[in-house]
Image (tube, rainbow, N blue to C red; front, side, top):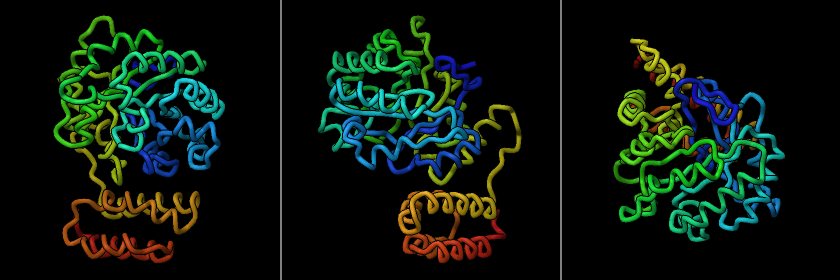
Length: 328
């Protein structure tokens, strides 16, 4: 049984990665329905929380049916991270997660996210400060290092554990790679083989289906995997991985009716939460995933990216179901 503090997550938990403008409450609810064991909010700026910025505080909204769930925070200032931890704890998540892995320029240029991989003493100090600011379990997500010349994660894993954190998730790329090139899990395996490491180690990067999840577990002995981009418009991935791990021979592949049905459910929740226009616009990131791999879908794809009316979008989904009802 894998545990983060007192949170039991099963034998090989599947984590939904925190993704900006993706892992909002509607998408989290869908992924939970299909078997995600632990989820996180979109990452939240510590400075934004302290300023009570609407975009940041809105991300604190969590519900009991999403549990267990963590609130992920990021920042460059240690005092601000301590205050943000206290504010996040007040929202009553199950854990607090620190983002030391975001590679985007607007985050890194402020000295936050993956930028902390260039200042390990500050990274350690910040982690200790967050741990000491909450009674909740604290976890963190990071990368192998800043670039190929500074892959530090295996060297600092023990030091991070010694701060009191309860789990580490490692994206198997450097910051320099962003999301390009192949993920290299070798150092994750090295950390798992370190007898001093007693907290769960979760791997992230290029988990695109049940076969890669199985391979990473078998090869690197990780305690679980975090799934990010492969889940967008594809929440079935969690259920498929679990069924494969349970030795089920027939891994279910959603037919067009299920794809449309789940997409519609997601759409309706998005609109209910954000309003018609915004809810539909933000669904555009998911539409392609829901209908990925369908031949001759281009005209429908274009239409989905143009509509801003719920009535029109639902009608379009009905047309998609009828047009492709005979495909498997």
